[in-house]
Image 1 (cartoon, one colour):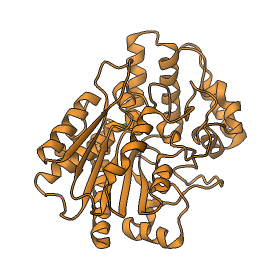
Image 2 (cartoon, rainbow, N blue to C red):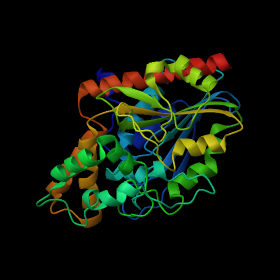
Image 3 (cartoon, rainbow, N blue to C red):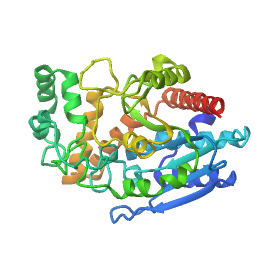
Image 4 (tube, rainbow, N blue to C red):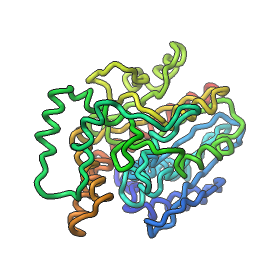
Length: 366
């Protein structure tokens, strides 16, 4: 248990150093792409480690598309690399580990980038424009995006409960989280064009993936779903044969097909705009590219939204004190990477099991 939990790092800088050291010890091919940021004292970069021939079936693991979620995603990648020191990678497979896609958010304890962009709403597929907002988001804007620092009299809780009653909880969550392109300082802002991190991915992903025609991609995320459980979320509609492959490989109970316009209270996620996975599948449309969001649950959507709202206010309008900033950022970190030893043990063990299932399937395809 302690060995797995030790894979969690206290800071982005520490996580990056450990990732690079572990990958280097395995003689992985490492490529780093610096991110230009004037608002972070740290050296920020997207780091990519690859192992195995570039024409072999590939397992892709990406972390920190939502910056602060990188504490979990990086831990999974480090656990896998450390396991390779005693159980070498499977010969004839390619491993592509992309660490810290949003390093600014990872470093600064934000879900979003320096420009407040939610990267998982930023991967628009041409000619889809960077425009639009859910009609209900406009109604909720003043509630979820106050134009003031955090603190003072705050009627968020009673107002949020009223909206949940008026619009239903699932409708509220969908309206807020599907992505919006009209409120640059608001939550879940998709940007006005490709962010720097997105451009790096789009320019270099062919090099990372290599020549293989068979790819399984796990994008590591946290927050949605019951505590310490997980779902593998599909981004795009799949035909019956493809869905059968996902369910056979990972278990039907673990797979959640792509969301549609229907709102189901039992679903973990909803349809969103500008998804990273949708862009990747479109870009590699001529290959067998299977993408899943590996979502590991933490706390209730209400608690997570409240934490995001408070941090976003502080980021844009300032904190009243260092202690307030630490408390708000601490709550956000707890929502996306709980301190519970049981949570950390269970999610890392589950993530490694999913990785094993994916590599078994890739071996069979090979």
